[in-house]
Image (spheres, chains in turn cyan, red):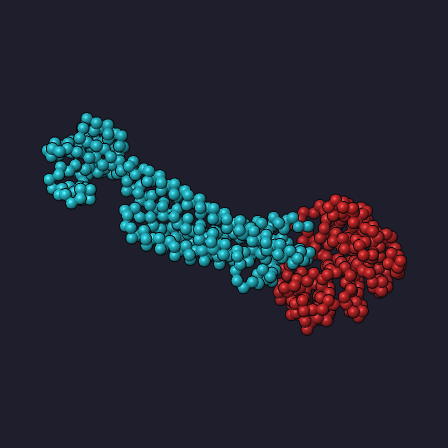
Length: 282
Length: 235
């Protein structure tokens, strides 16, 4: 049931405008998808780093009272089942944390707060537990960074929307290309119909060309996206932030699958458009 | 006996215009040989379009091979079309294909293996005198040569019904005679043949053929034996 001959549209040496448009939409889709995936990893890292971390601070100028409160806090924490590991942050680390904010002033004689870090626990319960200790403060790191986490979530949604819009645009472009090819080859296709060719045989003639051009465009789009992503990754690495948006092996596999998926979507959209148009023929 | 083609009160109009064909009722029996005559504009090509399923009637029943073509699901039309060989007045060859590939087209559409296609196409091209030009594109062929390619394409599948619209319009008398000889041979093997023509001499060469006279979209005297020249043509 094959028709092994080319239509004029198939004889063109260069991929047409359709391939260029496919390349552009593929590039957009991959960049948006890469951003979505990178933000996902960043959000996960941020969540892991902060959401469950709770700090109990003992702020007291009197060192002895500070130590006594610390001991009391540890005893009470031991009695709360929901609290995971609790450990006192070494004084050196606390000094290092504070140093950037006091611009070279020696911290040796400063009455530094005692920090107790908890891996899990409910901040409200802890606040209630230490309500009677006026020099104790409970701080949930996750709550502090909530707006940042929500911003990352919003950016992920936007980038995912852009990726889906680009994929949809590819499908629509493929439909237009298929209809244009059908109109251009109307006379030849009319002859094939008259000789008993089925709609499926005729649509295959055109989707073959669509698949080829979509593949070329998608490959070019993938190559361009790869360069852009690597460039941005190198810039992000230079910043050296604690939160590092990056693409793991799984994300790269997803991007490759998306590229093939885009070609498949274009061919499917073209096939649907062709069969719908051919059905209207006598 | 059921007809290969059966028209029952068939009419055809384009849009809201007047009917181009009206009240057509006739039957082409299996193995019969018919000429379709009529003045220009009488509706010969429209009638051929109905028979070859290029158009659907505005009213009436067009029955092909015992099936109502008008109500047939679209997906079944290709299988009916493959049983009909058509020679168009304007040839309708695929311009990007060689003569060989044009003739091979119906076989490829029907899914025949390439190794079986080549000998059949070569034999037929040889018969129509175009073997040396098998690789030529239609644009490089003369009108007569293109018509011979169109004829070869129409008969290569040995269809049950052959419909030809002015098939000898661009060929010399010798080729016209050979064509009629071929169609006659196919007809003797059981193929039904319908030829639309202005050529009175052609009608004389097929004794016993039926003549359908189309006058202003209506069949006039569809059962009569051939009489030459047809009335409206002789006037």
